[in-house]
Amino acid sequence: MASQETHLLSTARFDVVEVPAIVGEPNGKTRQIIRHPGAVTIIPLVDEDHVCLIKNYRVSVDQVLLELPAGTREPGEEAIITAERELIEETGYRCENLEFLHRFLLSPGILDEQMYLYVATALTAGTPAREEGEEIDNLVVTWQQAIDWVFSGEIKDAKTITGLLMFDHLRKNR
Image 1 (cartoon, rainbow, N blue to C red):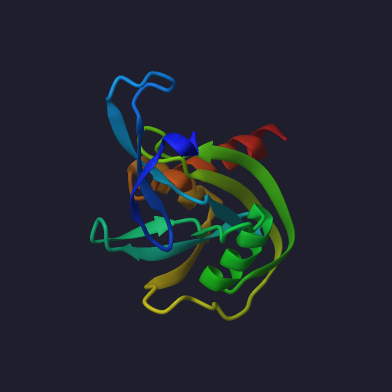
Image 2 (cartoon, rainbow, N blue to C red):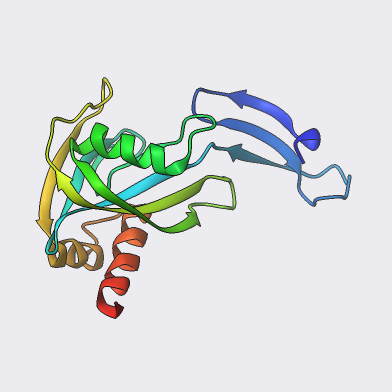
């Protein structure tokens, strides 16, 4: 498929390419899509009843969002390594256990990014190693509060909604 792509823009995090609208049919119609190396999101369980969310300013929507910690994979990096790194960078927590739950697509109409979802347990608090310019604060809340915020609309971030609801379902059915 890459041979039929025309690169339009390359950045440190993603590429914008133009591809045939219908695979295998050179009818001249094209679509612009974003190629992304993938990312992870982590559910940091502080204990059985508390989760660490982050308050994260997002310039694209000019809002502070409540989110699960997350981050982009480096080229060739295994998703679990990204999850360990991003947990420390964004929250300061280190974990003894990191369990893979699911892999999902965020916006497959324009983006090939795959998001890997992990649950981190047996946490030890530490100092975050946030990137320059990141405006992030930890927010430890009860599990029920986080779920309530999903349904009240306080949590708007898709990866966070997906992760919390998926793990909530697993918690109730284990």
